[in-house]
Length: 255
Image 1 (cartoon, helix red, strand yellow):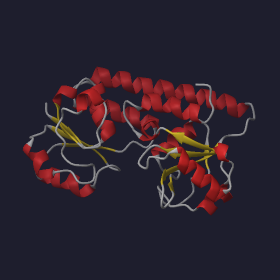
Image 2: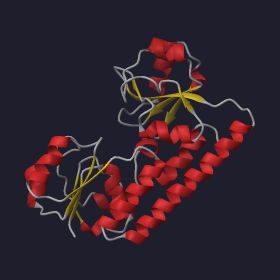
Image 3: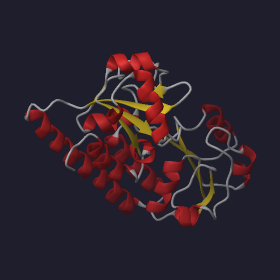
């Protein structure tokens, strides 16, 4: 089998399913596992893949994600007769189902079943701990999650990040904004007054100086701002096993 992956989290999943030797193409953003993926040919980015080159590689399957990749590229590959697997998990349970489906397509059902079961077990554990906290009448942590600067951009309630943090018992103060990745102002953030402002490592690489900047702009206490690992909170695939627990720890759960 010959596989091309156009989504970084799915590239990592291919290796964790034990099918890395079949990978013949990946995007320039695919960086895990670092010791192996560097040897695989780059076929452009997630938004601008080299369609002709992908077709020339004669893949048996191209892995895409509806959010990461463009519909027109998927349509161009399909028109060229390239078999596609397109996924878009919205939460941890959806990710487990996706893992099983991709594993079946790659003839690695046992590995897929193991990873999916680990995601489901971690999710059940985190939900149980979150329920214990809720039953104790402890207030649910209220959070905002930022992904970009200039303009400031956040996540609403229809995102994978939201789903992981909500599963851990948190409340997204920007959940009701109408777009999935809304632009927000410092004044909006100040008015929402979250307990935690989570600054992601990707797609914008937030640093402590950006937390200082935003604290000054909003007037919120500096200790509410925290840098977080965007890969763990937004990559859907084998990394979700660790991401589920990380979401819980981010919100103060003892998991």
